[in-house]
Every structure is written in structure tokens, then in C-alpha cells.
Length: 399
Image (cartoon, rainbow, N blue to C red; front, side, top):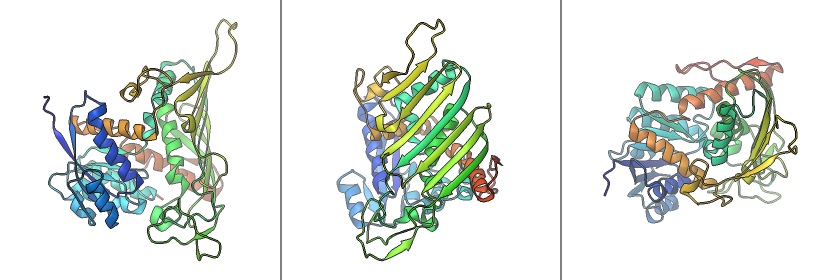
């Protein structure tokens, strides 16, 4: 039997995302025989009693607690996952870093850009390994798209279109959960889902230098939540309501450092797209497009230099020839799912922790996004193009 170091896992916040990370960490041993570590679910922190019971009885955590500080301070915890509501991220992540733990934080690392910068500065000062939840990077066909672009198969990249359209906030009867409140979530879709679209563009095309932005809140009031209610739960006509205080919609025109032009859109209040996290990339020799709703398909258009081949996009199906797909299912066109991306993400992050190397994307990449977001916010207010200024790691410069 191979002897591997055991990484003790602590999770703060045991809603859907905390559970997804916990399941993913536990699945690694059965899916990645080449791993250089094993995982041990030590302690889960959540202030909802039935979630504490579920963490122990259903997931196999050794213990659960209502006090997140007990997770951060636990002697057997090596890695802290921060999956609590956004405005808690800074306090928990900074405490975990100062306790010497590796820290994985779901995006946004801070509810607002200045918080993200302070968290990144604290982690850098503590010298701990960090990770951020930009899990769509790990879709096998997204990794293949990255390879095609880097190889020059598409030629010089000229245009990029990124978007994340979701219906999770399209129902006016959807409850006024923390996600719709600037004091609890920070900004709205620009932090929640636009960040994914821009992060993929950073990975695939490179930095953005200038931006022109706009935003809107289409559903301005929502029914007040009941105890334990989420944004997926519904109120009824006549229920008391409260004011939505962050944005439903965000859009931008951008210029990339390499000269390419791009557009981004994101909405949680749109009708039609259920979870359309998608991008189109256009180059001088070809193009490609990918959509989370059909995540096991990539469409590729390559220019025929001879000029005799039929024109059009070719549909490429995911399969075990692409990164990590074969760990879940063999062959071609046998699909993997959303949570499999979380397993890959956790495998990559925990491998970095076990090897003592910084993971990508980490808090530095989170700062890259909020640097863009800060310029976008300035543009929305001023109505003019704004320069993206990299925010420093000294806690200053955020919005």
C-alpha cells in the first residue's frame, strides 16, 4: 500500500457548494489512483443544525460545529474551504491564512473588490497556498480550447464573446436571499457569474486593458425570505417584500492587451438560458465556441488553406483523449457533469497543496478579476471607457 500524506479538510458553510466540495474531496481517492495525497474530512462549520448533522452522518466528517473559528483553529485541519455567504469570505479566509492553513475560497473571494485585495494580501503575507472556485476552467473541452488557442491553430485572436446567462433570479417571486443584497453578497451578477466569464477570457486570451460597462436591476423588489429560504425558493403574491440592492445584469465592451476586442454579458433575470456559461473565440485561422449547457461538446471552425474543404463548424465530443475526462468515463461522447468539474478542481488544488506549489487559479487570479470589475464599475458610473489598473496586494485601490 502506498503511503501518502493525509490532508485534513475543514469546510466553512455547508450549503450546496460546501457539500459539492466535500463530496469532491472524498471522491478523489477512487478516481485518481496517481494522486500524491489522501483526504480526511475533519470538521464542518455551519450555523444550521440539520446541516451539521448531515455533515457527520451523511458525508463522514469527524465533527461539526456552529463556530467557524473552530474549523480554522482545528489542529488537524490543513486546508480550509470557504463556502459561506460572500460577505463572510474576508473574515474567514484571512483567519485561515493567518492560522497557516491552505485556503480555497469560492468566488468572489471578497464580496467587494477591496475585500478580495485584502484577502490576497493576507494570504501572501502568511505564505499559504490559495485557490479560487473558477471551476469551468477544468472542463476537458475548455482545456482543449486552451490548447488550440495556445498552439496557434486559430491564428491571431481578434474577437472574444463571453457570457453567463442564468434564470436563477428570473422569477419575481424568488425570495430576497442574501444573494440579492449588497450588504450580504456584495455586488450582484458582476461578482456572482460574470466573474466566471471574464476569468475564462483571462485564461484563454489574456489580460484586459480597457472596458466600457453598463448594469441594471430589472426586478427591484422580492418577497422576504422565510427561515432557511434560498434564492431558489418562491414567495406568494401578497407576501411582504424588500428591495434588491445589487445588479441583475452586467455587460461590457473590452480591449485585450493583445489587441483583440471582446464583449461580455451576464444576467440572472433573463428568460430562456438556464445556465448559459459560454464563450466564442475568433481568430485569423479559425474559431471555436463552448457552452456549459452542452459542456461535453465544442464547436471548432478551422480555415482550409487549400480552400476545397466544406465550410462550417465541426462538433467535437468530449472523451478520454481530453484532460481528465477518462478518469470519470472511457471512450468518446460519454458525458461527465458539473460536479465532476469540482472533483478535477479539488484534485488540482490539493495536488498543489501536497506539493507545496501555488495553485492556479489562486487569489492572484481573483485579484485579476476584481481589477477588471473595479474599472467596469467606474465605467458604469462615469459612462466612459476606463483603464483596468491592477490592484495592489496592499489592500488599497478597490471599490
